Length: 134
Length: 134
DNA sequence: CCAACACCTTCCCATCGTTGGAAGGTCAAG
DNA sequence: CTTGACCTTCCAACGATGGGAAGGTGTTGG
Image (cartoon, rainbow over all chains, first blue to last red; front, side, top):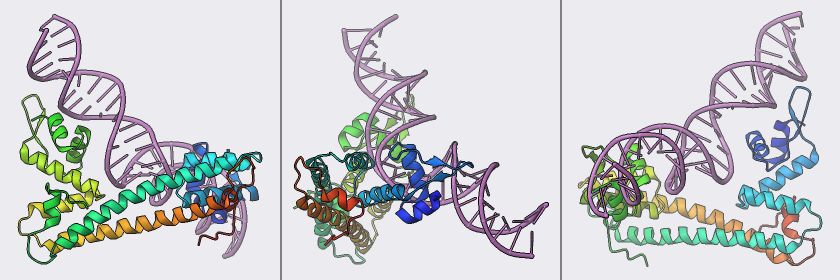
């Protein structure tokens, strides 16, 4: 199986597969006589693992740890759970940050009549308003 | 006022002030005989505007538009409001994406006993589980 | 047998916002 | 006159991905 098929089968682009190999996330693939990377079913499994972890927002570093745990048949599930919950905390912090932005912006937008008149509380706030970001 | 004081007063680092100037977000600052950038009170106002807009998650491109609207005393507040609400939609899409990740991860983590045993639904899911991401 | 085309290789560059550092010039105080 | 704090420009990195060039490979068809 060439990299194109592996990409197709795993949902990870060929570009990314090469990149993951280069940064050491994936072991170097074996090569054909012509130098083409060759992949088997278990490689595709690994790529799908990476893809799913990316979809869940894990960083490539974290995915490296997850891969290690995955391959370690004697891992403690507590380690995996801790990694996952730590990531959840990161995500929730990010969510809270974005929600705070949304709250402020909605508040400002509500106060803005939003017509042809130039008067605009949004710009006023950005220009140094009183920050009632409640 | 040198760039250091302007940075201190505005909350935008000197590095970023230079960068914003270089990418054309800010007009080139006037220079002293020695080539030092010089800033006045209105420059600091502009920097603070940029800082607040960044804090609200606007891209530098969007901030450029906001600055134009800010400086245009005959702007229509509807334009500003539209820009803000469009940004809110972007933020909320991102929030929804992150929340979906959190939901899935929490679900998986709940199913994981998280002790010394190796059995782990989180890894099972990443390795190709049935995706009950409800 | 050779052309066309799809695929592969490596390499560099772009994004986005920010930070870090190196190498060198300037300025004020001791 | 030196020290230290500041400024300048330039170059590179992060994290994850994409785009594209230049060149080799492999298969198919005329």
